[in-house]
Length: 486
Picture (tube, rainbow, N blue to C red):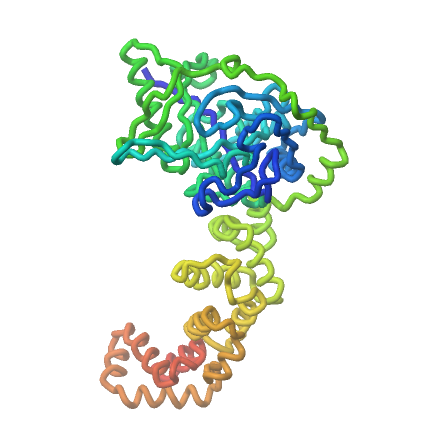
């Protein structure tokens, strides 16, 4: 029997606020800061300490919800989600359940099979837990760091609308791209600031036009912190559950972990239902009221989102989908490109795109720097692109000049003048250089005229060498062709 996977994703994204969700403790990099240095009575769960909701975190959550076309609820309720774990000092997590911040959204993703719409069930606010470090050498013990406890966390829950590993990855990647564009999350998965939990089941596959089979029993794989781990865990679960059903067995509902070393899931606990958490309204926090004026203010401040920007880049600048994807992947890169195009004036946008995605990307990768750290401003790159477009320097010289601009921060015109690199287009001078090369290489000229036309490229190289790379290549080729045919 052939089975169809049914996949839903829960995405947890830490919000880049300055302070925690319910107290004034700073949000620090938990991979760098000394343990337990950003902790107060509120996030440590001390008796009598009262939480206060972080307004900026609420606004960041609204940004994401609006980008996902959700309905912002005018009233939402914080609740206590009760469970006991060493990194949860209060013995409960402040979250939202029955009345979340936002509901009923959608996200359009691109897959090999075309566009697919994934419904978003809910977007809600909560606080993160602390971090445990298990030490197994010598006397085994566990260390608890509460720096992360209380950090604002946004949970985005999809409907089970995905039916392939590819669709799940496309959804996760698109969502990560959006939260980065909105400036609410860095997307740094190595630091765990965005994590995935996959709900997976399989059901018998039905033919086209037939009603789909009922959902199967699902399992939840927790804390997947990379796209690769998410893909492999989902793929493994699909195969495991299909094998169980093929053998006439029953899939157990449970919470699973992912063992990346062995490439398998493993059972953590039987799957809890909502009532197991004993949700009830947080008595120390009033209802969260979001007025229409606040919603419209946040909506008006939203940036252009990646999908819309890609579409505009292809329509406005005539770029290919491939080039648009490269440029739009990072908001800062897209902004840099547009400022370059604006500064370059009449130079085709495609030329600017080629320089950004080609030579500039290569230099950035080699140096390990981001576009924000570039010493080459958009106007400086525009100056270089303009000089190449006008024939003042050729393409190869332009690459050398950009490399120097990258290191020194100097403008292209300054470097070209200082090094005497301006391209020679004087037809008389180039004609003399071509004649010199042909006179110095009679055997090659004879072979060319005997049918070995590939020698034209070698002769062209000799002319450019004699001109120290400064001759206009188009003028050189035209003159070389003319003299070889005489």
